[in-house]
Length: 529
Image (cartoon, rainbow, N blue to C red):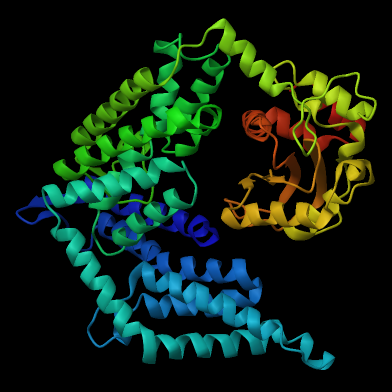
């Protein structure tokens, strides 16, 4: 996932430049749009193709980086370059994104293994910049050239040819698989695997699978964004605010916008979104919709990267309608009894065993009592879970791993930690699924763990910046870490995550946090959330 995060901007940039060049400067011919040589549009097209050429090397480089840190960058980058160059494989073509994944894994774990070899202290300082990159690059390169490169290239070429040959019922089967994977976990591993598959085929000049994905990714958030407005008897009043954000995320092709709804009612919502995404993907497949960039949603169509905009729109609308129909069939009406039941379910103690507690429990700490009482109101406030003592104004660490450990080590939250190492591991495991560096200097690491007994939010601020592999590549200055017990029945972490995301999109809110000089200043700002 780390490799995908860094790769996507290259593919989006390259794809959109190519799309712009073809749309404006392309001349219609029997073989499609052709750009005249020597024109400015030819230059823009060449720049776009250059950006696309970085796709596999960047994927492999940052996969290796996520495994072995900086020593993995060089072997990953060079391994990815070898994987994507057909000159090494006797006319079999290149190994595509499959080879890039293999190169990233090989480079990362080989570099990591070399890092663990004991060496004299005199050599330790030059190991990361000389010996590890050279040795691991040589090993990865030779393995690809002499052992696995040609078979993988043949496999990828055959796979690409097979996908391009799919027509009629065969393409429907592929659309069903793609649509299901996109919607089943809404931005999780299955979603990312399908997305990466489509992105890899873009590099081979095959845009059909990405066309299916472009429709499928926006259907769940758009459908759940519309549903609370037209099915008021099946949604609660608070869902309307969530729906607004869901629609916005759907327009920009972000499936994650549907997560809050799925978290509250997964048994009914997830099947509904799967059906909608599958319907949309099938329409895209049968009508030849293509997507030339590694992204989806209406925003991509507006920017001119969709082939077959009309059927893309039709597929999206039909997918949304299919999801709405399923929601109407599957979701139960919200009545007074259900509302009371949901509220009662959320009133339980946040202790590790999830047994309901009352304010008369003599073993309940004042902090736990306060949190329990606050949770009776379903409209969560950030200050329900954060105290001034949970605010750390001077983060000393420079990496995300050390920062997470530093914040979890705050004295004020120690009474609620039952297993510190487990808590740290669970938060870091979540980081491996995809960076929580949101961009613009903000990170929101989070995790559910058996290592903590009550939900807590910790704030940290760094003046020097923290390396976090953020989406925009910038250092992080503001960190909110959300810690929730693994057995907690509610969806507190999702609600707080959504609340924080909305607030941190406001420039004024971010600036106030950056300018705050004391924990009291920060807490007073958070009280307004």
